[in-house]
Length: 57
Image (tube, rainbow, N blue to C red):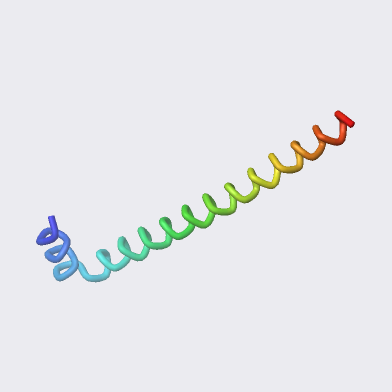
């Protein structure tokens, strides 16, 4: 598997670099969105819990 990757990078440096940069960018954006989404969901659940507590009083 690694020999195929090295072969691609040596024969087609521009396209290989473009693929690697694209994968890095996509992974970074995916992780960023996942982290922000988890934070937003936690905040939303906390607010819903607070609203429920306030209504029960």
